[in-house]
Length: 272
Image (cartoon, rainbow, N blue to C red; front, side, top):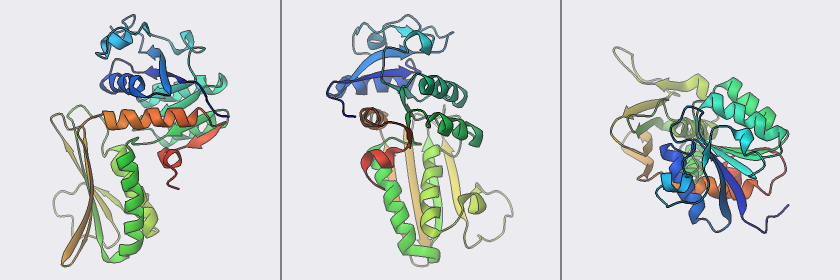
């Protein structure tokens, strides 16, 4: 299936920082059209014009409190909200034949299983980070780990704004997964999340994570491969949420042409 018209997109969490960015990104994409905007029922933004809220001027798309009120108005839902809401939305979309882009982080294994089940009925693209640059970093990290091997220690440092509720970031964890895959390790077995006190010498195969929270940092990630006499660093620094917004809309246009299944941004970019 190929789309010859603009893909109709709904944004949930439309009044949040990322929601506003997504609305702007849709407005900038030639093959995408915002046709619905959703918020939680108690949000003061319900009933407000979504374009005006995003600083773009009125677009005639008022924010609603229930996805079922606009279920016939869109092809793809973009969801960067919270795990419980995302899981519920995936069920609604799957039974109604709607595609979905999921950028929500902090999902449990049960949440992920529920989303994977929904993808048996409709196409879903789920990623911890929709930035094209970050996804190129995932590929580079996997390749670097394979080449550098066990002779290098691996440490991952990430920084985000003071409002971020999960740690380490989903992107940092995905970077760890990319490295662990390249080293043929199970991240769950070797990850170390922060160190304090007399922890002893570093073990040979561990992958360390350090988390920084403060200010308005959009997202900084650095992976260090450290050996005696040298250090290799692969970093990505985001100065605007628009990098995530552009990627999510790119993914939405791509997922609209898929039938069903669970995909990620690596699939969208052809990096697998």
